[in-house]
Structure formats: structure tokens, C-alpha cells
Length: 218
Image (cartoon, rainbow, N blue to C red; front, side, top):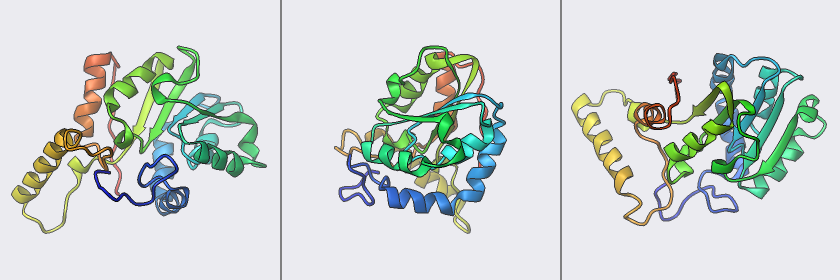
């Protein structure tokens, strides 16, 4: 988030990452997030990596989707989030199929070619080079494996009763700001404008074979 006084920061200084805020936001989006998981059509018994898992809010949904013959590895850089994730799953039925590890996302702690699906939710805005980071995950996938990225794209947002030309200019200015923000000295960004265009870059530059885009109400 490109601000001088960010809100809801975690112990690493990342805005909108305080655990209490993440939990509240997750509850408010529960129906949409449950539908997202259903739409992915996980195979039972899959090995899934939750890249940028935070406090493990998606773990119950992922566990339900892959069943108790599957495996989940949650990866995050925040020790506080990982401690919370372990506490959240303690005593749950899915505890035996879940592990959490601290790691950079560019170097996932799994062997190459071992993961059926990498899931990453609301992470891209905290990555200096999101396309490069996501592309690096490709080597960890089995042949035919999938990288699933869930994030907001303000380039697709529409405001009710606002002139379409004005709206277009606002989004153009917003995308120019994303390009200039690092030079301006800001560390964080609150959107990944033009998600489909950037996701297509994964295919073109790093040889992902197919891309599918689904949209949900914010």
C-alpha cells in the first residue's frame, strides 16, 4: 500500500497484514472465498502449497477440497503469522495433513516438480516483482500442475453512475502511479493493476502453457 502511514501492519511492517484485520476480512468474504475454492476443482489427494499463507485462514478450505489423503504446506515470511496458523489448526481434523514453514516465495522449500497446485492469495501487492516471483514457482510444479493466483485487480473495478471516460482516465493514472511508485520512494502497493495482462506475461516469458481468469464481486 503506497502510503506513509500504513494501517493494520504486521511485525514486518506490511500494511493490511495484522492478524486481527486479516481474520475479520476473511470472515467478511467467506461466501466468495468458498466459491473460489470450489471453482478450482482440486483433485482429492493433491499436494498443495499455500504460498503466502499468513495465519492459515485458507487452510480449512484447502483441506476440505483435497481431502485427508492430500497434503498442504503453508509458506510465509512472517513468524507471527505462522505461529498463529499452527495454533488455529491445533486439534483440527486436518492437522495431520498440514505443515507450515518460513521461506521466501521465490525459493519454496519443496523439491522441483513435486507440487500439484500452488495457491497464492492476496500476495502480489507485497512483491517487488510479482511476475518474476510467480514464474519462479513454476519449477516446483509437477507436469500439468497449476499455479492459482487470487488477488484484486483495480483495473477491472467499476463505479456506479460515473462517466466511463472519467473512470478510464482514473485507472490510467492509477496504473501510471504503479509504474512510478518505487522511484517515488514508496515500498508498498495496494493493487496489481492489469492482472490479466501481467498473468499473460507468465505465459509469454516463463512458458506457462495456459491461463484462465475468473472474476468475483469485491
